[in-house]
Length: 130
Image 1: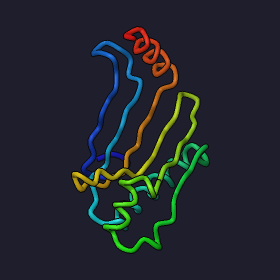
Image 2 (image 1 turned 30 degrees about the vertical axis):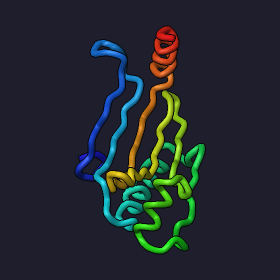
Image 3 (image 1 turned 60 degrees about the vertical axis):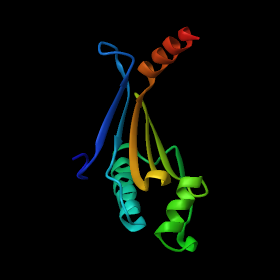
Image 4 (image 1 turned 120 degrees about the vertical axis):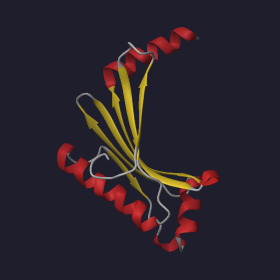
C-alpha cells in the first residue's frame, strides 16, 4: 500500500548497494478499466498538488471521444494520448503518469521521485563508462 492505493511495486534506483539512491518509482496496480485508472491518477494528482502546488508541466489529452477502454488503452500505448504531471521540488522532481504496456495488457499509474543531486552525480558516473 502506498498513498492509500493497494497492490503497488516499488523500484529503487542506485548504482550499487552503497551508492546513494537517485530515483524511486512506484508502479500502482494494473487496472482493467479507464475509469479506475483515471481515478487513481486524479486521486494522486490532487494529493501531490495539495502538498507541492500546481505541476510545472501537465499534459492530459481528452480521451472522451475515443470510445471504450480498448480504444483509450490503445491510444495510451501508441502515445496518441498522454497523461503526465511533473512537479518541481527543491530536492528534484516528481513525475506522475499513466502508462500502458499493451503487449502485456497492463495499464497503470506510476509515480517517480528523482533526487536532483544524486541524479547528477549518477549521470557523471554513467558518462565515465563511455
